[in-house]
Structures are given as C-alpha cells and as structure tokens.
Image (cartoon, rainbow, N blue to C red; front, side, top):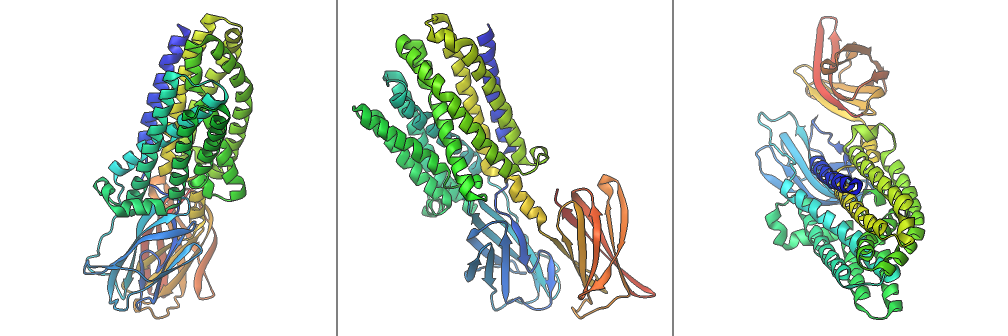
Length: 533
C-alpha cells in the first residue's frame, strides 16, 4: 500500500511539474537591451549619423529594420559589432518625425531576443508607427517539447547505454527501449535546431520547412550543441550494437562525455562568467544526471526479470550513485549561486520560480532515493524477492520524478537568469519629456530600487540651451501608496543633478520635473519610469 501511494504521488508530481512548466513559459530571452542611441523615446534636433544598441552580453544581429514615420520599412545593413554594442550606420535620407528601430539578435548563449526603440527627429509625428514584439506560443511550445525529448534522449538514452555497457548486460526489451529513447533524442534534437531558428527569426511554425529557419538555428551557439549531440547519439547506437564488450564500453563512455559536453557549449549557464568555472560545472552536472537517470530503466528491468543480474547491478549502482549524486549536487549549487545571485530572486523572478519547482521535485526524489537505499537496497541484495520487487516499483517513481524535473528544467530556455536581470537593472533608465515651453532628458542611475542619482539636461523646445532658475524632481507611486517626494536639483557640468534619491520599491513611478524658467513661469514635465527590482 505504501508503494502504491508513492506511485500515485509520483504521477501527481509529474502532472504538477508539467503544469508548472506550461505556466512558466514566458516570452523572455537572455541577452537584454541596456541602452540605445538615440535613447528610447528621445527627440533629437538633427538626423543621427549613427545608431547603436548596447546589450547585457555579446550578441549577433539577425534582423535590423527602421520603420519610418510613413510606415515604410528600411533594412539596416551597415553595422559593426564592438563587444556588447551594435553600431549601425543611419540611412542618409532621414527627415523629421518618429522612427521605430526594430531589432532581433541572438545572444552568446544561443537565445534570441527582439525589441524596438522609438526616437523622433525634430518633433514627434502626429501618428506614430507601431512595432510590437510578440511571442509565437505554438513555436515556443514545440521548442519546449523538443527540449524535453532532447533531455530524455541524452539522460535516459545515452545514460542508459552507459549503464547497459558498464553496469548491466543488455537484454532484449530494455535494449529496445534504450534504442527508442535515443531515436526520440535524435528527432527532438534535430527538430529543436529548426525551431531555434524560427524563434530566433520570429517566424511562425509553418516556416519550419524553409532553409532560413534551419540555417539560422545551426548558426547560433545551440547549433554546436545539436551537432555534438547527434554525434553522441550515433555513438550510443553503435555502442549498443557492437558485440565486443571492450569496444561497447569505450563507445558508451565517449558518447556519455560528448553528450554532457554538448550541453556545455550553449545555454545561459555556460555563457555566464567565469566560464572556466561554469562550463565545467554544466558538464559535470549533465554527466552525473545521465549516469544516475540512465541507470533507472535498466535497473527496473533487471530487478524484475533477472534476479542475479539485478542483485549484481544493484550492488554496482549502490557504490556509484553516492559519488555521482555528490558531484551533481556540488555542480548544481555552483550553477545556482552564479545564476540566482540573491536569495530573493528565487521568489521574484520566473527563473527563480522554476528553480524552486525543480528543487521541490528533487527533494521528493531524494526522499524516494533515501527510502530505496536504507529500506530496500540491502534486503534486495541479500536475496529478499519481495524487497527486490518493491524496489523496482519505487524506481519507477524515481523515473517519473526525473521526467518531471526534465520538463520543469526545459522551461529555463524561456526565462532569463537573475544575474542577467541584475545587469539590466544596474543600467540607467532614461526618459525624454517634451512640452510646449521646455523639454528634458532625464536619467536615473542605476535603474533599480534603492539609492539613485537623478540627472536632467533641460532644453528649450528648439533644442537651444536653457538655464532655468530652479529644477525639482518629484517622484510618486500611487499604486504603492507613496505620496510625491520632492528633491531639489543642483546644476553641475551642464546637467541638473540630485544625488541620494531613494526609490524604495520597483515598478512604475510617476516622475515630474518642475522647471522654474522665471519667477512667474513654471513648467511641469511629466512621464512614467519603470524601476527594476
């Protein structure tokens, strides 16, 4: 009865994990725009000779376009990459009005991101062109499913091959199941390359048959992961097929190492600094997951159908798994510390929420593993047939939990890690406010909750210099119940500055700039600024 309840709990955990995964898929990516020139919302006096986009990490451009005031679109084909900044040569025929610079790039970790930045020349247009970045949920759902298939093929297929060659002699049904998992892995991995290209280019699912989708997918860093994984899958097939045990073991070990290394070639964790620490951590984490998860199906089969072979395999597994789990946990902790950075991010970011869901399932998995090891393993090794069959049923629960964990982990493809969000939050927030008698370019540094410096360049409507008698910044947050806070600015180096301003909460803040032009002429400039956590 107890094992029956465990089995039902495992099924519920899988369903919960899948539901959580579907709910947490977000239209987010891992490199983010930190600044643009002209800045978003800016009004400039003359056409800029150069446009630029700066990101939180190095990127490669996929699509660069400029939507003109009349709605026509111009491709921006003259650009240069300088570290994290994309410098773009402006078209020569820009007139007055509002423009939308729309872009789509792929980050160093292989994840695409797109967006738009609006600026005006002379004055804003009466009707402004619109550009929206929307997620194609059909493509993203297919990408999520393909990622689950990739993980299943790697951890259960390639990992299972390693188990069958090193721990348990391959037999009919479990060998066939391992072949099937490898086939799923090959199909899912290849499909994920094309889907990666669709997501990178912002194309619908029907464009999967086009050359552009596949070429773009393989050109990203994820393309290297796909190629190495496909090689690892085929090595696993050969390892299962060959008759010689020495050759089979060698090929299985190479396939396992290649599969784990493939995951270290792309992804947000592998792209994080310091890479000399992060890439080995990803490799070891993937390697030990494959060793552990890959042993589950062969172990279930051996315990149920081959008494002596099952006992021998169980003994080997019992010696190996504590070492593998120890390395897995240490590597996982390193990855989590670097990616999450602060404990509060576990609750206030989508990445942290997914990590908590994964940790919850892992905790349940460890409880099941502990029950196996301390209550069932020794009796099963001693020849207790009842304990052996109970152990096989509980290992089924382990397998279900592993699949749920893989489903949850697959959603990280769509959630930026808190370390990336912290880079964005540390960047200044700028807003251009235009009125009939004056305008101001206001910058808040950093653009996150806490102490900030506020500066503003105040100009006349024709962009000529203006030296008002007084400038005061007024912040309020009605939704949070924060009444207006007035902070007087001082003129230094041509800009009005106020230091030590504290914005205690993230979210949308109402900003008002009171510009006293003369004793009898006060201009109030108002807008909304988004402050990051």
